[in-house]
Image (tube, rainbow, N blue to C red):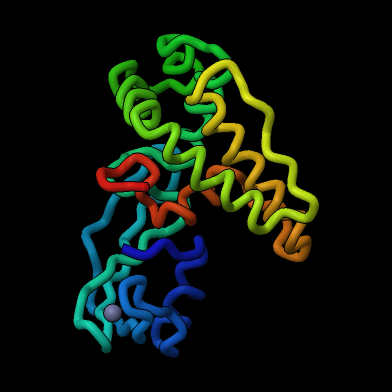
Length: 188
Ligand SMILES: [Zn+2]
């Protein structure tokens, strides 16, 4: 699994030109068919490209950066739920505001809560690593909120280091940094 940009044509060009590296060994990824089409709520239908590494032979699905592994909603919607929860909103309020099933939203919140401290550490390290005069976020009301604040802080830090990149929405950064596994088993 490799998280790639939103522009499918550009991703295809890079793949064909040998410009994408294997996340496992750094070898060159080659086109290798397609994964099945997924329709994401709040986003377009995507048919992710599959690739195979010339070095280690492993296959990798190229997941667009707005998608998370095993989740049917785009990361910006899931991120909005996490941010609202961090600000103190209840699960029913969040679900109603985003027009998503309560159980679905509860699943996101529970999963994120279970790994909040690890997520906080990953994004605080990124923030401190890339930031120009980085200021780690102050402690919030909960570890959950600390983790959300670290993601937001890291996206500000990335913008301060590489202004040409433009504003990287925090949740797209979270998807990219986690390789689409922000809410998938085994990450961080
Ligand atoms: Zn490889």
